[in-house]
Image (cartoon, rainbow, N blue to C red; front, side, top):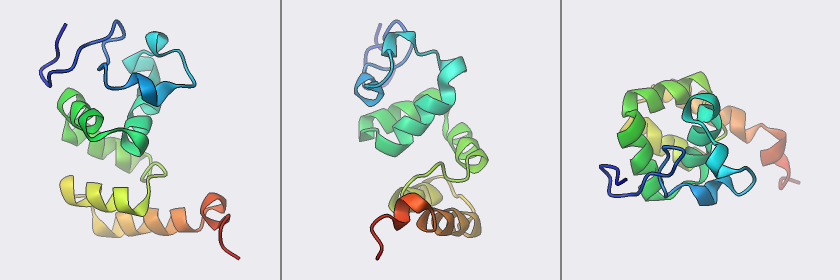
Length: 113
């Protein structure tokens, strides 16, 4: 079955653009309701432009915005957060806090002397 973005739907109901993002799980067993946080996080963090477009058309910008706010930026890079700040009209002060928190994380400090 073709989705309105032109991609094919998998038995999971998810786009055929997504399986490569889930190399560590059985994509056929992913369920939108049960695995939504994993699916959205992977798409926003590492998804291709078509995958991001699919997410926005499938779930809607308001839901993506609410998800980002609920997950405090969800470990996205500063560049990704700035993009979503502009596209979804996220509060700049909140995005600044997410970026500052990310820069202070142990993961980000691994390359600092």
